[in-house]
Image (tube, rainbow, N blue to C red; front, side, top):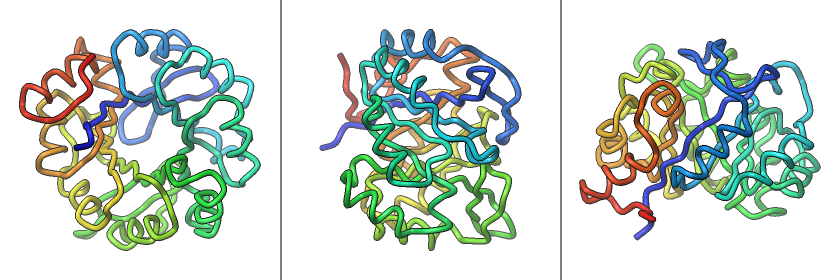
Length: 252
């Protein structure tokens, strides 16, 4: 049985790590390297670092920074933001990333995902999907939640699995940063349609929220940011809580 992972998400802009509500990430909370060092000591299973300005500003990935960050990261390291071609993935992996999260580029060319999975392996390719609930359905957004693709979530995740992504990171834009709980229906919408791991993101406020995302939503992993930045709750305690509720987690 695969163990449920607890994964802190680090949102990165030029000013450092930021956090906000509903993808309005304006509040600076830290710098990257100290945060990575802290999470190394808190028994996280992975780390996700997303450059939320890269696609909007048409920026290349910052390979030098990724190399520096990866030297201090002793768990699997997933990097996203502005990735739109094979050479970028190759350079990110060369500079220490273990996985890459791809979002906006997928909507332009799913063949890019298929080629990436073929070249580097599906385990390296994470399909990042940002969603809003509109008119009784979930719709996918690109460019850090600013552009409605008018593609239904239920249709898109099936295409992503067929294209070769190894897992799906599903984030609720509506609940991002609110700490009111994950959108369980959204998570279930994905997990019921694909056989690959689903990472739940957006809205975690306590450990019970994480439990519900796994048990009711069918998530294989839990990603969270605000709960770890703004409360005393920790990834280690989250895993212990899940373990004590009968969920298999990696307890060191």
